[in-house]
Length: 188
Image (cartoon, rainbow, N blue to C red; front, side, top):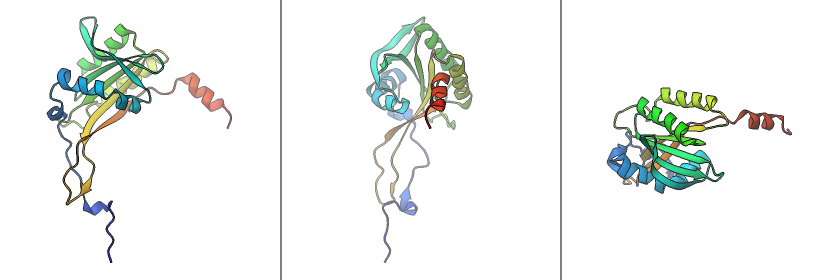
């Protein structure tokens, strides 16, 4: 007698393409930014911090940062949203917002598969964020986060489930050297 496990991989259907986020959230200002604001808890969980909304479309020079928040340590967090792939213009905005706002944390959230790039946050921009984390260590922390939506795998005879958001941190600061030194020299 054959026993079919609910998780029998041969019986699962998995979509080979993720939906175009712009079909779900067509406009950055009208849809993506409000979605991020209403899901700050999920973003905070991904970043290992609790985030509280402060303001949106915050003027910084002649630009406007998408979201200003505070974390549970009282740090100022600036969030810049972008439909991917990431570009040099938004990278410049991320740096400008960090400097103009004196932010403690800057989050660059990129999403969208419309352009068929392997990652909404390009590898060159991930490396640039890593460099910024080295240069601004103990002053400003830079994070790169990718947002995607997909449904969970289901048996072939079941309909597709609801689309679920997924946040993946693809760039983050390393532990500051003092904290990592103390951790390494602590009791073993």
